[in-house]
Image 1 (cartoon, rainbow, N blue to C red):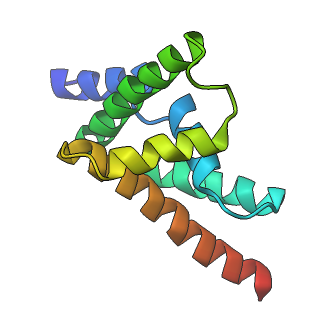
Image 2 (spheres, rainbow, N blue to C red):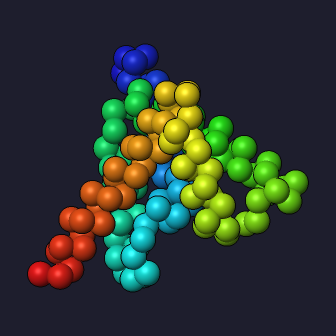
Length: 128
């Protein structure tokens, strides 16, 4: 086995391909439907989309999720953000979406796009 293949296996084992807790929380906040089966389907769709990303892109998204999740966890530990406060998380996402920092804007836009696409696709399938 070549060394390159070993690095790929190591990246998979380290978890670059799984949906992280903060990503799951962001997706949950962005989903507008109260229908629990639809919410679960949307979350699964986004999870699959993240898994299908090329490893170098997925690693970047995972890195952003870790950094932003650490920031949010810090806010929660200091009492500046209540756990489970969807509106406060949405407020942070909105501010990041208008940030002058491009990677922050892109992160929120990517997550919103995945959720909106899944809501439209899966919602239409359920209605049919």
